[in-house]
Length: 315
Ligand SMILES: Nc1nc2c(ncn2[C@@H]2O[C@H](COP(=O)(O)OP(=O)(O)O)[C@@H](O)[C@H]2O)c(=O)[nH]1
Ligand SMILES: [Mg+2]
Image 1: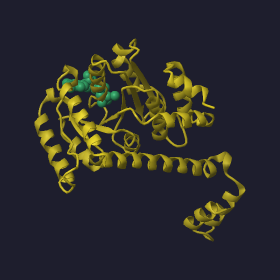
Image 2: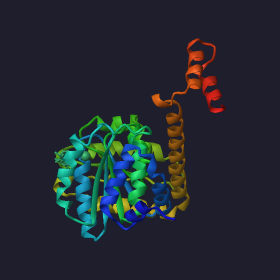
Image 3: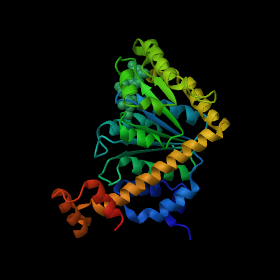
Image 4: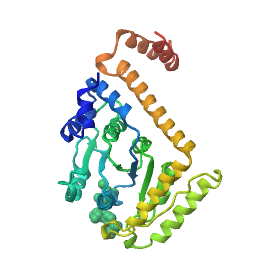
């Protein structure tokens, strides 16, 4: 028997979708069957991830991309993920206002998610929300995340094409390389090209990318570095062309797409394993006498932490 909420989601009932995502954020365990059904129906929607430092212009870019996709008749869902804030405030609220012009459009769905204390973290909640949107059959999904930390990289793992947005304002390039973001980027967008030395940033990024990709095989994707001025609606068509080129590259190299999908699945299962273990041992309400007894031994140095973990797992 199929799940009633999953059916409503697949029919495109937006209120059911909104309520389901709220339950995902809260870590509601009773939606497991719904998520199971939706997972079976998902996997066919191109997911474009967009990240970069706060203020780089991600939301402005998303807004312009939305406008173009809509002009082409595509139906698009947007998920804005803010790991820094426990509430949907600040930046995300600003994003909602900025994307207001799409508010009454039935071909657009915009939803923000914030860290609400779910055990497995926001990355996992976002991954579940992406499955929900994916199963609805949008033509594209855009997922915007703030910043360049590990949480964001975990979210981006679920995108097929990852855009890293940078600005000409110096320092950022080096920062991005440091954060390991270079490894996950498929396109490096230099936004705010209207504000000055964008070409220098483009060259610096190209150099860093070549350093990374030159050792890879002839079939490797070489990330392009498009320039945009989102507020002036400049360079957006070229950006969309580059995104489509990446999609075609993956279609032409199914082994690369398969590797990506496998890495996504591996990450998700690993996250769930970690969540099961965390809820078994780490939630105050779940701390068993057995767990505390072993902790006592570690504190007293009769058992080391690694052996303690192994004993707990094999209980
Ligand atoms: N000059 C200029 N300003 C921009 C451009 N893109 C965005 N902005 C401005 O930069 C600020 C931050 O933009 P926003 O889209 O909220 O950045 P986000 O934090 O990365 O989502 C806003 O005031 C935008 O109007 C651009 O291409 N050129
Ligand atoms: Mg934003």
